[in-house]
Image 1: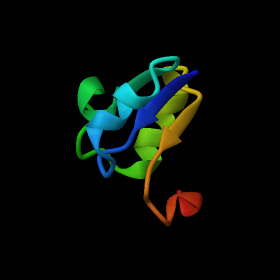
Image 2 (image 1 turned 90 degrees about the vertical axis):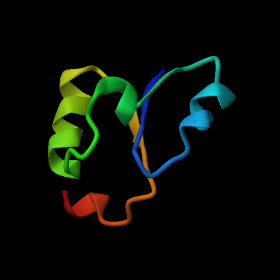
Image 3 (image 1 turned 120 degrees about the horizontal axis):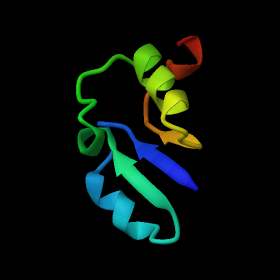
Length: 60
């Protein structure tokens, strides 16, 4: 599974799941990008899921 960790999560989490392909927003150079655009990038780059603590993501 290809996962993206949002900026609000500790980057060390990506090492806790070695069976998955995990990138951070920082790894991809997407720091500071708003959620709506981040979701578009997620789809364009074939990620399966975004892991985040954002509470208003459903409104994006």
